[in-house]
Image 1 (spheres, helix red, strand yellow):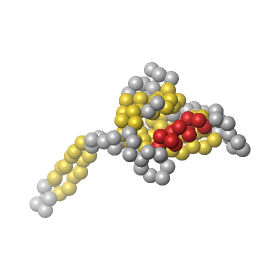
Image 2: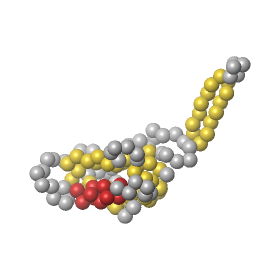
Image 3: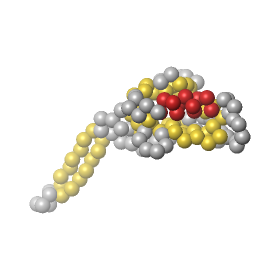
Image 4: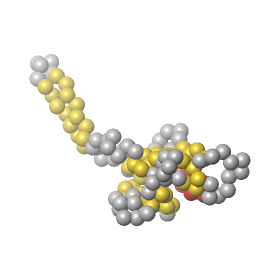
Length: 129
């Protein structure tokens, strides 16, 4: 097991946990009734789109300002995909999630001029492609 996750070449503390790991299901199922009253079941398997939200907290998974700036630069390329390797060795091909805030961060305290190593509590929203 590693001491960090890796997104592209950026190391992320493993204290950022995969918050929605079990909130997604690969199999879609729908049921409806035909006009004769018979039950129609339809199912399919999703090929991509699993959300991977890495989330820090006040007591774990802090990111430095330098790491956040590197992640923001990585997120600026809207069509890019990246290799994500979790600390436990699992790997995924991901892109930053659609929406206004694929990365959110709050400084641990409110410094006027935060240095490069200042800690932030962050959420990184990715999607498996």
